[in-house]
Length: 319
Image 1 (cartoon, one colour):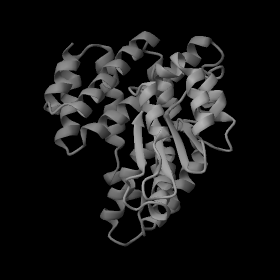
Image 2 (cartoon, one colour):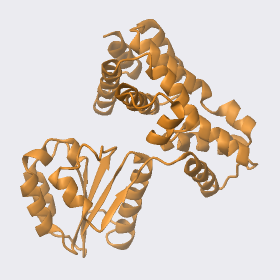
Image 3 (tube, rainbow, N blue to C red):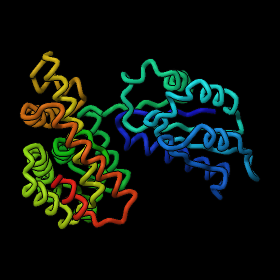
């Protein structure tokens, strides 16, 4: 059995992956001994083959989760071998789950492994939600967390978060705690939520683009000293830069410069698209790519190093 999860909305795809894992632990093997996760970026063919060839231990089934296989080099070097392996090892006893983060489907439309996985019965695509869908998602998330929110507050929160559900999830948690059992109001959202953060993200992007290290460091330190986790700040910055790159690409193609049309094309909230379009016009694509590369580098080092986060930000901003 093969399950394929991919799409730009990594919050919902991660949720789905968690549901699949939880169900396996609940119904098949509560010990977790028959569940293995591989990093597809770094795993070689023999690691994958060995994992898929291992028989279940004191259980009827085994689950192997392979993350970001298409983000690595293995998929192009060993495509035929991998497909042959999957055809042999995909049995009732072995559940193989592929999770791809923010996969560009257009880029992989001729990729053999991607095409193979796309044909599977259990494939789930997680595209960004529309503005209305975001509002429904917010209302559902608040209810799920045993809270309530006024419709006008839902719409306002949607304007602030765009379609970044990772950010939305953290903001909803703060709002529910702040409301203490009453309905969340628009004033709560204005008071607590990160409209200032959004403004700072725009300012930070400008500062990085202009190589204004002093301002960039000041803005970063403000967020970190205010209690913002480094990974959350990075995720918000990466999401913003990716949006600007997508907008810049549309502007460079010359099809349209209308922010509403851009919002429709990229499934962005009109408010986000309008501000993003204005900012993207101040950058060349290569400038945005350079900023994105810096942020990815910080993210990688944070995950693999104990280096002081503020110092790490400072060093990379100064370069």
